[in-house]
Image: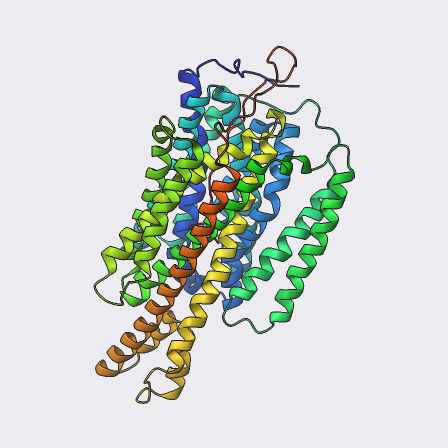
Length: 543
């Protein structure tokens, strides 16, 4: 058993721990950059590999499906087999899968590679966040460490589209999948020296049937929600059935966990109002951020008509905003309670969303980019401090499991945001386009244009000058109205989150649960830290 290198709970971290933090931040930045760059590479790889529309959807979605499905398993597995060991195994797997994706010669091969990337990615965040709890025992230092980690994550989100656009333009589409290989090599070369190992000495037997049940609960729900989000989904019954199946299997999973001596997920964690309330708040905040990112991205690309590289540059402030919000959190904690800082941040997001409800279809590009960046900035304290509350609500040996729950809530939130808020936007767009004056536009082009703004923009290219301009203007107005409505729904959601934070977290004067006596156990009495939002995800670029 290797439970080494954690210092007593009040000791300050030294140079080794801070260098180790830089190594842990690499996987976070890598995954975020990889997701952001994929969307810019998608048109090129689709043309080069000759993938069908169905294959293209699987290339996008399979990563998110398996990432969501395996997070719970990997978080608990790291607590059992060793957090550093699982991280290193995941780094090797991610590197191999990245090379496979970069040199894929068919759509099928790329789908397989993306699936492997999703499974490997599920090992990274829970392991890195749980290891931070071992390395940074002092509460203030741990808060700074989490903020740095989160800033790396969202900094990767910001620079991913920019770097990806440059690489696609100057190399080939596969190069975007190689972005993370140098980061993984550094992690593998230094991890065994700089990072401590920890595993729960009393973890008990690993229940494989619970793993199957967790996958059977999560994957159908994620699939069903994504299917409902697709405006061209031909069979909503299948989507509804998938969600129902996932809920039924989820109920069986919960029942089994309550009866096992060593469950995959310890349900007693949810007895804490702070734990449960923060998970719910982060899930719906992720949904709001994903929704506003989706609509603003389409606005930049289709309404403003910018190129992929230029669009990536204009989207960079979103990632920078949340990175700044995360980095500012430790300073806010010097004078504010956690709940107060979170509420202030959400208040900033609320004001920015209200600005988006007033946006127009021309002359608003800078205002929209700034507003979306402020929405992201306002969520920084929640994703940094809130996830610290989640993991600090459990004993040290459950830190990996709690971190995986935090990540899963963010993945679900991003999926729900893209699905539900995207569906609202699509419905408003189609409603506005149904009454739009398109009498001079050929019927087949008019029908295509009513589906979505991207189709309308593409269809306009086949029309003569005046008609093309008229179609773009009508579609742009319709989409901007849809964005206004979605922003209004998100504003109401943020108001509800502010109330939830005030009710569940306001009385928490500190976000820590005392760890066990460092001298009482062979396991290190680490004070757990936390996770931050991811893909999708986001992410941003949630995929």
